[in-house]
Length: 92
Image 1 (cartoon, rainbow, N blue to C red):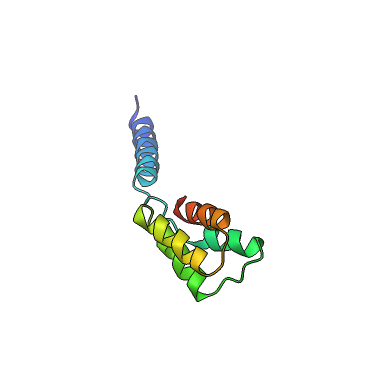
Image 2 (tube, helix red, strand yellow):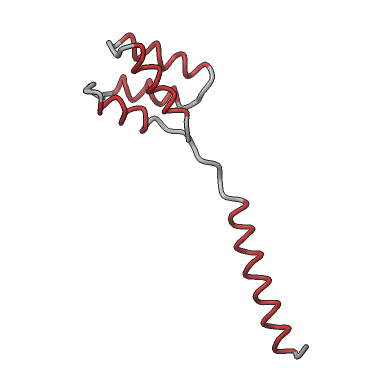
């Protein structure tokens, strides 16, 4: 193999390795409350600071899901809408 071919092959390997590495170290998706608030807004609820706070809390998952649901129910969101909205907040 000539020196030129070796250099081309080495460059190609380097580019492929760099591309693969950058895909491997991409940060995991962060859950946000935006899907939660969008869902509630589409169902006719007014989205203000209390809804935003509840949905943000729901994005943490676990106990945050329960707190999210309880907070939404406390401000007159139906239980089924609150449950679905909080699940959406945690999915990302």
